[in-house]
Length: 150
Image (cartoon, rainbow, N blue to C red; front, side):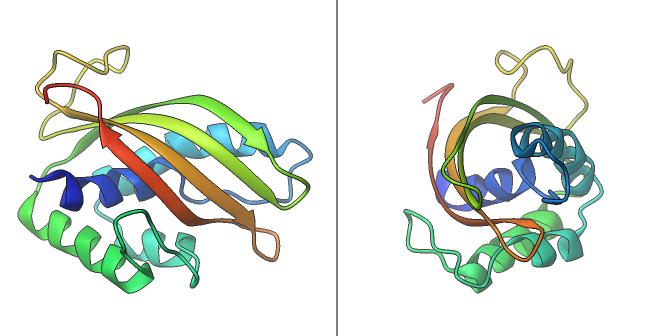
């Protein structure tokens, strides 16, 4: 699958379901990576609808609806999905914004979670912008690039 289609899926998948109720937003964002893997692997589009902010725009020109359509299409085309992700950095920008660097790999089968390369997965680096939207972290923008196998 091409980067333009795969990137938004992995991007959304890496940072879903965060709640801002915790006293440690950085820990919340990091914990979201694990929760997001389950959402991707279960192909739960509803999870994505809740997470992606109405104002979402990415570096490829996708808005919220385009991103959700890409996610739906990827789920239809791939009946089995495995994701491995790692948060490299979380930088808080005030009390209601954050930037995260995440590495994520998608494969059609379960892989060793200690690996992000050499497993037949497409691996990407994502620079993700998040905002606290009424007590819930939502993604509002991102840039991504393929890391392995170009």
